[in-house]
Image (cartoon, rainbow, N blue to C red):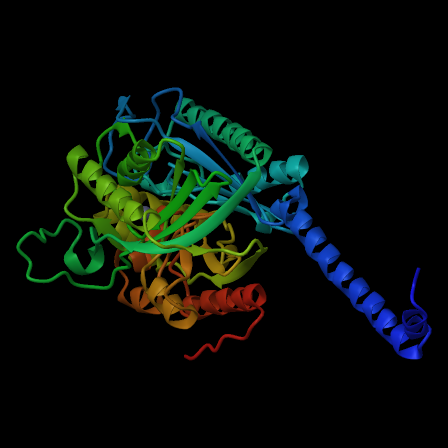
Length: 486
Ligand SMILES: [Zn+2]
């Protein structure tokens, strides 16, 4: 039985005040506890895991099923007669937190022409709804792969119908293999982490400054600019297992000139990395190294050595701290018009025909024949591809053609050292000299236009046009203005 004094207290207003406060704070506490509980539940739920990156990777062999003419050199006089190792095409599919997808293709070939890229991208769009900007078709530029149409075509001796048919058949095979790799990569998208870092390897030498076959063994110093960075993109799955490693280097894949299929040093580097990390697919892309050669060159052991050097540079980065990227993807692609100068005059062409040999002579004859037939010669190339990808905090600049190292130096100055530069992509229509190289001339500045079948050199202004487009795209990717100082 309650005592009357206590009963009296219960009836006093002060008690109701305390009771109300207790109910109010109790309610607040329950709300806080409930929301903590729900948050904890949510962070363990699959939807939270799905809000990260997804990645899928696949590889297919693209070694030609028959011995055919090999790409890259004018001097070869017979088709391939064996192989050191298989040529590969590899696909990395990416999907960000919003469900945006992209596809990176790397390959042991000389380069995709625009025609081939368009055909492939058309099929990828139809089948997987990927837009042109979402696809990078890159090549290692190996000089130990097969000849492809519309790529360096003028450098080879004229092909007969049987050889032309072989090239056509190979391109059909290559296209089919790209589709298979893309399907497998997109079909294996799984939660992943992506991180990046940069290593270094120093076997690339500026071939314009050091001479084509210059012996640098006893040189006190190596002349001319080079880009010795080794960009690395690391993909790991939920169990922190390495599933793919993408890496690049700015140097011609020209250690070898024998008649056996191989990926040259990039092929050996990929093999080495896949031996070191059996769970991973290693993917190589060529940077802006059109004026760079591995020096010295000429032997299988050298190609293996450069491959191992590169693999160890990549390993060092993979085993260290790397920057993890936020799961957002932005892509942009544009084709810009670059002007082409007039061909040499009649007298000069006649002089080339009289004194020249091989591809130079064939080119001069082709120009004269076209002029005599009243054919209009191209005064520009309206399709130069410039592409930008933003993977979280990491920017990628992807250019077509064989881009000289000056572009790497200029873009690093403008966009920072951590930018990833991918060359030999989407359309390898010829060399892309800087204003300096264009003025100097030589192979990369002038005559390489001939082996790609163009009427003359690029017009001055090429560097500014390309860099302006790159900056416009990076502005779009990064949402900020970038100063472009002359
Ligand atoms: Zn080249």
